[in-house]
Amino acid sequence: MRILITGASGFIGSFIVEEALRQGMDTWAAVRGSSSKQFLQDERIHFIELNLDSQQQLEQQLQGHTFDYVVHAAGVTKCLNSADFYRINTEGTKNLVRALIALNMPLKRFVYLSSLSIFGAIREKQPYEEIRETDTPHPNTDYGKSKLETERWMNESLELRMNDNVFPYVILRPTGVYGPRERDYFLMAKSIKQHSDFAVGYRQQDITFVYVQDVVQAVFLACDHGKTGRCYFLSDGEVYQSATFSNLIRKELGNPWWIRITAPIWVLRIVTWVGDKIGHITGKISALNNDKYHILKQRNWRCDIEPARQELGYNPEYNLKRGVPLTIKWYKENGWL
Image 1 (cartoon, helix red, strand yellow):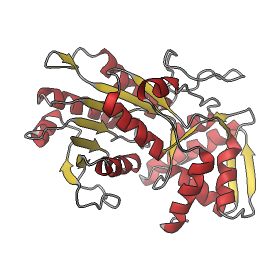
Image 2 (image 1 turned 90 degrees about the vertical axis):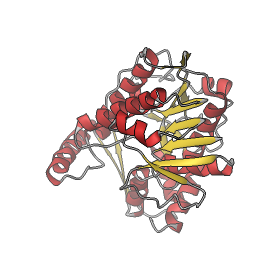
Image 3 (image 1 turned 90 degrees about the horizontal axis):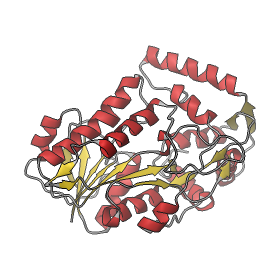
Image 4 (image 1 turned 120 degrees about the vertical axis):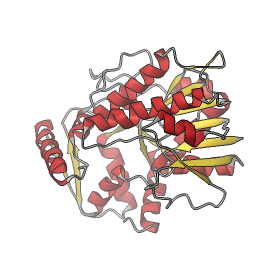
């Protein structure tokens, strides 16, 4: 079986490549010319350069190739300019799908990595309830909006037909993904090692997580027998409070002394506004930006993974107590901490 993985040099994409190789697949990693291949060292990997900005170029680059599966993990989570979210996450996906259709690619499955963020801050009245696929999305970040626009296009577009059949797409919506090689949650670990932890808001916040290997599990289950047009939430099946993650990180770091600061929402608003301004001045994206404000402000991240369990056979194997030690161990062994 031949598989193409976009975003292969990224955090999640590199783990998908490793699993495809483990399963004996003919594995193609789609990268850009500037992409790092730090985590793509296996000599069995075939590389292909794809320009998601152009359907015409994609058709040329994919011409002569046949793939049974395409996993589309390419995308951006942070941008200086909001228009880039839509150019890369939305239009880039459209260009890829249209190119595959134009080439009559004999796909068994196209797996698209979306996000729980497409729903935004809903079901925020306590006690919080799980976000379900029947809920109406109200994304509160440009990232979430760009992912939702892509999903809606895939669900509603009359273009999505191939050889008189519906384009065989499956959508996965993971909550916050962490694990080795991940850089955003790493900043929290780095801060705790430097003796500080920062939380926002005094109202209860229910948080969910999913370890990267569980996302990979879901990807290959979706490739094997995901139902065309279906969307699945992914988490580890548990719900945590805001301090749980940082407490576990601190434990794995040997319980360094620390100062835990819980700030009101309005302080976060000021900090992220300043971060955005500095980012535009310096040209470097700040970790504390406008989207991050809405993410940290949101109180309910519960989601219903029962459809993934029932239809895919998804069975998350890593809760935080198992996943955080593995993550911190990797950060230490690779000189990040």
